[in-house]
Image 1 (tube, helix red, strand yellow):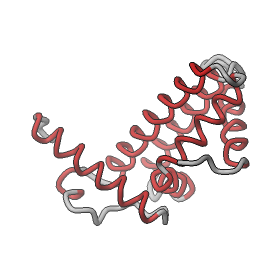
Image 2 (cartoon, one colour; image 1 turned 90 degrees about the vertical axis):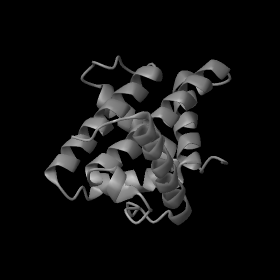
Image 3 (cartoon, helix red, strand yellow; image 1 turned 30 degrees about the vertical axis):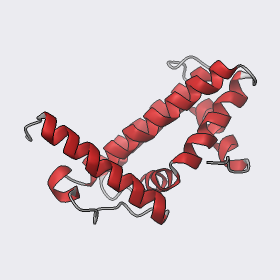
Image 4 (cartoon, helix red, strand yellow; image 1 turned 180 degrees about the vertical axis):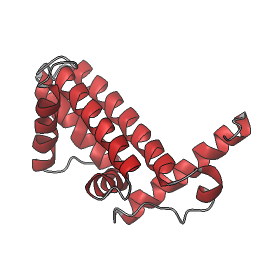
Length: 157
C-alpha cells in the first residue's frame, strides 16, 4: 500500500492534470499511460481510470447543480445540458471512459466501470426528477438521459 502524504497527494493531482490535458488534447480514447509520472503515481490502469472517473463525476455533479440552480430549464433539460457541458469541457476524458467501458481489458475494470456507470445514471435520473436514486428504474432512466445528451449538438466549451 502506498503511503499518502501531502507531497504525494499534490504530485498525484499534478500528474492527473497532465493526464487529463493529454486525453483532452488527443481525444483518441487511449488511456494516457505515457504521461510522465503515471507509472510512479498510479498503481495500475484501474487506479488511473478511477481517478479520471472521479474527476468526470465531480465535474458532472457540479454542472448539474449549477444547471438546476439557474432555473431556466426543466429538471430533465437542465441535467441534459449539464452532461453536454461536462462532456464539452472534458472531451478526452469522456472518450477514454467510453472506450474503457466498451473494452475494459479486465474483469476488475469492467466491474468498477459498470458500478460507476450505474451510480451516475441513478444520480442523473434522481436529479432530473425521473426516479429516486434507489428505484429500480433509475438506471434505465439515467441512461436514457445520457443518450439524449449525446444525441444533441455538442455544447460549446
